[in-house]
Length: 358
Image (cartoon, rainbow, N blue to C red; front, side, top):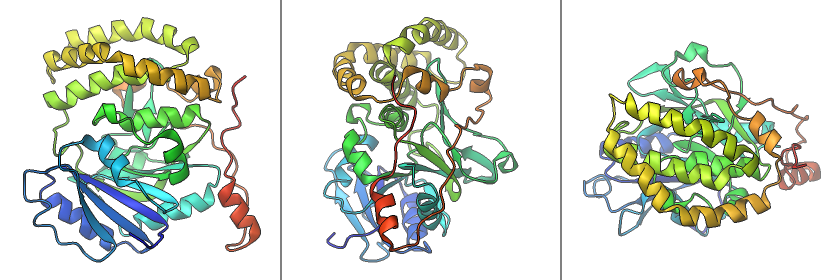
């Protein structure tokens, strides 16, 4: 794509069926038109791509030739991107017509932030929340905030969160490239929490945009409690913790995390214990690359252990409740007039967190 757009939207597809067409149609109906779409197909075996009708010339299909997973698919589709922003969108998500326009307005309101999340509503019941930002517990567990709660429980305005859920997220291209994108070894699941962790360690910040809404089916392709999902979630959690926790936080966390996981496995009734144990063992056996990544991540982090810990949930009761957790936001300055030198300077020098490593 030769034209420079404000955003590149990436839809990684694998056997998305009719949901992929619904997603493309919803993107074509956006009130803001300054975007391009890469539909990256991971060698689907259904007819989702073959039967797809591209709405216009802004849409392009790229074929992986194999199932590379969500993480690698987004990384490959972001190559040679000239847009200022990269948006990731699941094929089982249908954005509202104002979705991208609301995200754009949020980038102008919160010029100190470099990643933005969308309000995900359950497609089968839009009165219930599917997720309002990724929440991370100090003891090693992550979830989508407010999942299953009534929409009336959501705040009325934007909030800062630990990380955006990549089912419908927006990342600064420069930041995404600096971080090296998603960790491709994850394949899928928790890759968005992992990059969110790395965003935080580098001093970048994340905002959840209340009015940027999508209807999300959620694990429509892999199943929320399938063996595939459980295996990858447990395996990737091992790597995520090994890579990202500063040493000062890692050892207190692991002392509590291990007994909690054992208790979770012992009482498991709704998912396969075998898949979970297999995921943990695969994570331990494949830990060497995570340790190598850890050296670089910890060497380059700018946020202190104390500041990072303040961004996390400590109360274990909030894990079961899928409770939201918000981080104190800085005051937004008055935005400079569009096209002014001040606007260009603000765009190019978005500050990182002031919670710098001591």
